[in-house]
Image 1 (cartoon, rainbow, N blue to C red):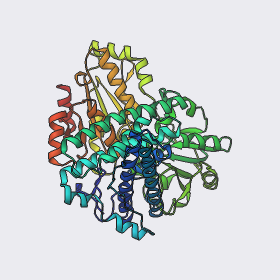
Image 2: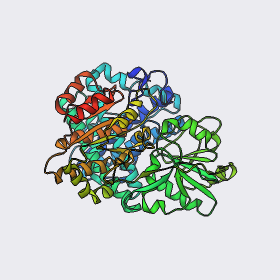
Image 3: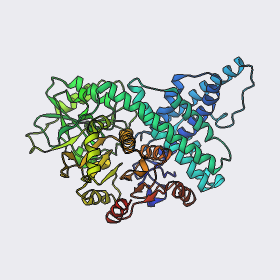
Length: 548
């Protein structure tokens, strides 16, 4: 195996024996083969769409296949093998769609070389053998590290974008332009000898389309559940039976809340589900009592200590400990071998496990944090914020957010937040917030110094806040007293980074380390165009920001 798609990749270069995330050689290789097959689907679907032929089931399978390979989603070799076989079927379906469209248009269909003659092996071992021939290392040997790394940058952007597109379509919001770009980009990734300029162009196009995708997801979430509003959230236990929900999916949480209502079970969020407690139509459920624990990388300890059932939605699962393997459940695309999967949102097994578990014997000491500062909430008080900046009471904004992780070096973000001067405001989002979101930062004239914008996909809210402030001051985002100091871990963060670059945002600091797939040559281009840089020390980075 060879995998370097996440920040924690072994030795900072690539996992070659077993994934740091827990992926086996077999699972990683099957994921490579699934991406290979999906590129074949994209090649045919792109050509079909150019002739006016679109199949929405092909669209949906494409984003699900890409999302499945995001870090910490699917570790189940049998499920991955099943997806590969479905991919072969959809490749045939896309080919037929294209050929029929070409015939209707009186055109001769192209000969699509990529995966055209590939058929899946009969068993997992055979599929793994196929996957071993088409991975990253194979392309590095033929195309070189720079081209391969940029291909992977695009691929990882597509994976992150597909996660957001899938969340949105689950709530009934979609736009064919997103599927069109994904198929276009997958088709481009089959090009034998792409240039660096072509690759960078597609990477920025991926950022542009991801902005649209995050806008769709924002609309899906707010149309379904209302705009997040500032909300005090309990972060200590309440006596009683309990279920904790982790991941990202709002519909899964809503369905669980409906099914547990009146059953004497308290529901808690975990990790990236914390922001859901600020949505009006979710927080109306009285048994959604608060947030338990912290970010995804602490789940083994936290789930082991949790006296109830655990539901994992979408990604962020780690190998469960045996002590709680019988009371953790997955749904959606997330899967782990031996863990019971809920495929139809009938959460009866989760409820049964919660009722059988002891639950919390007593209330914990009351402790609260405030969440829910999405763009709607912040822009409602934009006048006060603008006045504070003009008066000099508020000197600078620091966007400190992104993915959290277990790798050493992430304490930087705690130290950074603690070191931000008292006349500055911290905007935060995604699970990186857990490094400091229980600290008391106070306020500036009634404006909280810590504004929790939401999940990683709520980067759209952060962008809209920045754009609105720039408009109010008659300038651009790069000229605002705003510094972006971001942490990354997986492919959704890559998609967001590409969006920021598409928007021309400069001077981003990124850490704890730079992506292994961005080679020195590619990094030089990013530095030249966008002045992107690695984090240094909190003191140095704050000083550089305030000197802006």
